[in-house]
Image (cartoon, rainbow, N blue to C red):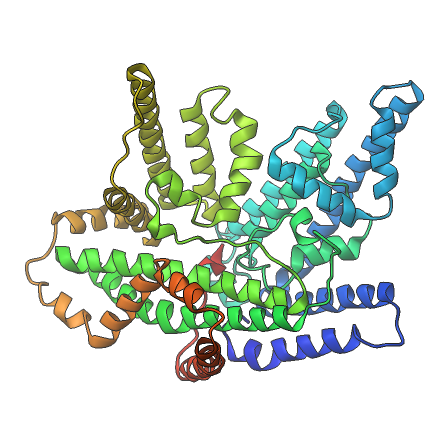
Length: 533
């Protein structure tokens, strides 16, 4: 079951909203009881949702959640003992630490709030934990990474020992567990935040489990940190405005997936299937451009749906995209694309490695992007995808530093490329990376690069481009390009508040939902691209 399926739209989501809002608004219950009931309902719903997609992995995921819950509490207990010992010895920092502990005792949400803010600022912990906690953290991270590798490589492991192959595992419900990469990074962020004392480990297993398994984000994110998820008062009563915003965001995300990504995906799949027999240069470029648009609207569509559902339940999930195809540089692109992953890599890998201030910055960049490639899958083409971005990030940083030194030496301002030139060059790098990402292997990607450059193409395939470019594909591609720019947002912002615009939106959103649902009912099953990660 995915967020764009008929079962989810007509059964699971309405039932979930009715159960949650119906039981949490009973006047006979006080606020604390309603909050606990709401969390329990959402956790049960999240477990049911996950079981529909990865039923056989559900016991493993539950054990995995319990293990990390225990690791975090183990570290927190040692931190509390260190604090008590420091107080007894008259440590000058003891009073402030005690105030923090007393203010947060029994209320992990407050600690989560402070942790989120402290982590966002990148401040160091006030009380550096000793080597014992470092050992616990290392063991916990090794456990999580090992679990990720085993689940992702289950087919290879069983095949090595003479067991069933990947096709048999997938057909019998043993495909890689949904969202395992997202869950792994989320829980590692929690463990590191506890270690750094930017968040306090929660004793509330219900609260920790709900944060990890919350069904809108469990499959494809956004990667939400514990402090972000429970910021404020945790479960909040959604206002009518927030509920309306969430519903509209869900509809827009669903339309992105069904009306743009799925339609473009049909042409993309045809081109990559024909690529084995040889395709001409225009067809090759069309395929990779359409895939870039498909991937963006597929992934951002899911995130819009997840953020919208979260708002309908009273949660504010972080944004994950900010018009990435308008980036002026590769670094700017990664500040706009999959932003929660980029922030995770920055805060929990790049900065601890030394960032741009300590060590070899180029080596740090290479390691970060190689890890980002392996996060998508333990395959050569994903590793090369990460290496591709690492190379261009290093090149970009080298010339940027060189330009800054020259400007300082000459006492002039730094000269930058015109905005249009920067966007075009960045798009060439980004869409080139999608060749590695879309291909099923490294050799197919290399062959596709040859097609883009006219190397090894078949002269008998020139008819393909006009055959593939039908009116529907051209229209959808044009709409996708327009929506990839902030033009639509700027128009909506300028017209917002006007009566005619409000009436237009009130009519257009239900009409868009109805049309999208008709397309869903008329189409075959089309999973989200990032669902496999």
